[in-house]
Image 1 (cartoon, rainbow, N blue to C red):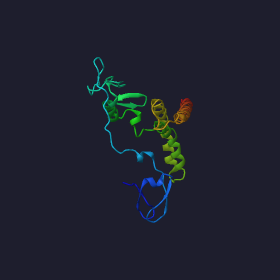
Image 2 (cartoon, helix red, strand yellow):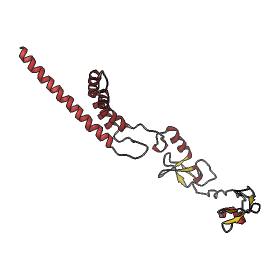
Image 3 (tube, rainbow, N blue to C red):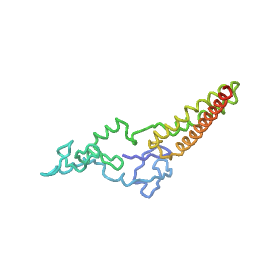
Image 4 (spheres, rainbow, N blue to C red):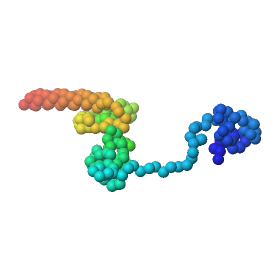
Length: 215
């Protein structure tokens, strides 16, 4: 059976025609070029794989198949298993049962298809109100909305620090990236907290002076 067809008339071409890499179609005489892989000339008879030698007396047998010799130890559950029941998981070797459990739980990083970007969340808490404040400048009700966004920073700044510290060591993305966003969120949040603290101190002093004047 020929797997090569003429690009002009579609006639079947024998693989031997392209031993030199180029040949002509016997029907339309059009020159053809093909690269024949050596596997095409090998025998197509399929040989079933042979099973490994059964375990001998004193050998440790596979937990899942007693007719196989144990060659590996599962890194998660510790059972002895054969190569047929083992799988590579990064630098570890696990049994197929543990591999399925890890996939079902989804706790392993390699099985995760999405992650919450906590550094972006912290950055949003820290910079979000100010971005909304700038955008609200173009609106008619700027004064009311702008003041509301400024008051939000009293809550969002501590929230940004909490999120950044809480998820400091958590995986930040499916692809490696640093903690730059977390550091920026913490620094800007500290500035906002410092500004609020200074404002509170000034208000308390003004209130104290006002109370003294009244008395």
